[in-house]
Image 1 (cartoon, rainbow, N blue to C red):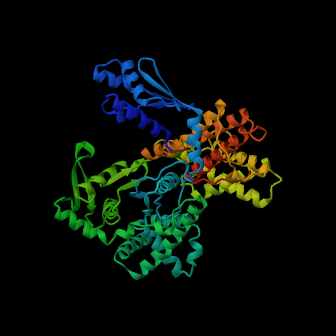
Image 2 (cartoon, helix red, strand yellow):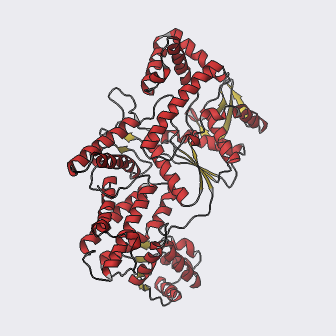
Image 3 (cartoon, rainbow, N blue to C red):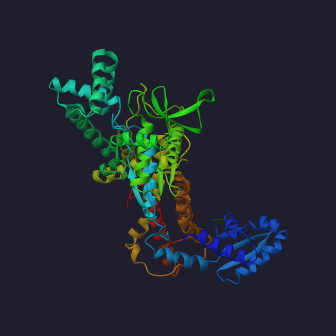
Length: 574
């Protein structure tokens, strides 16, 4: 149940019956407090347009709402309508949630949504910079699938390009020296650094590396075999990170840059047929109005370079063509860094001009900021290298393990390991998702692993505290029978918050801001703690005891589902 939508619909119908035009648009301005007070404040604007008295118009709307024992209605101020939800109304709404495995969230009308996220460069290991795209994108995927959409995960990994010439030449050199390549590739980062250093210091090697690029693009069997070996190992490294980070991407979701190679000449021919290509300094380009470079000169979208090679513009355009034409996506979401904003805007514009994107199809770039250190500089090692993501995850688990040791030294080693993994990984992800997607944020170990404040450990602990209520009395929460009986203000406040879960999920996907869900869960946990302190549960008399146990169970279920949609696990004991 979407409580806000329910009340919006009721007020809109009443406004329409009272002669208000565009009532549905007006009620979007409605406001509602946590205690179940709903205020329709768009009436003054409507009255002004109709040249009528706001309070008189509000009175007409009130009459159309009629006598409803569940709603307390009044005209307030210059023309607001205040609606207070009765305890019986809230109890009935909670009962519907109680019997819904979806916690009252209705399935949406299915559409095909392609989500482009993570997309590491396979030339080296994933680093901290991949955290944002990977976690934000995976949360979007989880929520969209939960809502009933057909989601296509698109991991557009970089597996082609000039940098692979150095890597393949280095692999060939090691193989000729009898080195075991599998052992050398265990640390891709060191392997990449060694190949790059050799390219800079050895001109003969650099020449060989450039020739390997040509041979690779020409389909040379030796180069392709080395390339395949390197790519396979790189994918294995990525999958290990995804598994540790609890990300739903698999090898089947990879559609790499190389997958579009055969389509690139076709793409050029199609653009030429549509008379979009213009030759400029030997390159084939598309010039569109609205794209200007330095000195206000037209900014070209280079489709094919003067040497015959294809830049990212061509590959990304081919990906758009595939997603719109072959996958027939209704919506395509790109979780890509802010620095690619101009590039993707140009890609979408060229695709639209070429007719690749239909009028019913929506392509969106959803940018994000940087992960920073405490001094507001990019999160890198002391020597300026990118920090490996796997190292960050391992450190998170290690730090969480030390915390668990301090708090619960009597737990078994296996229990400590499991809790440390869930808490450590959850802390990393939540620290990311709880921030506004578009802003930079500072990576802070102490804050993210704290059991106080808006953190994953705080929410995970709130969940385990609720579970301990049932465990102490050996009660199976799913077998509790009875009704909600709400009398205390703390109960009513918790009830309203639980009923806001559906509207929260809908709010998240308006602009894919996961921090909206994080804030909701944090507020829910805080409201529950206040309820638990104010309202005895196990020692309460009936019908309060059963009702409060039902509230506890519904709160735990909502916390668990909310965290699950964020890709964060819960545990029964901490």
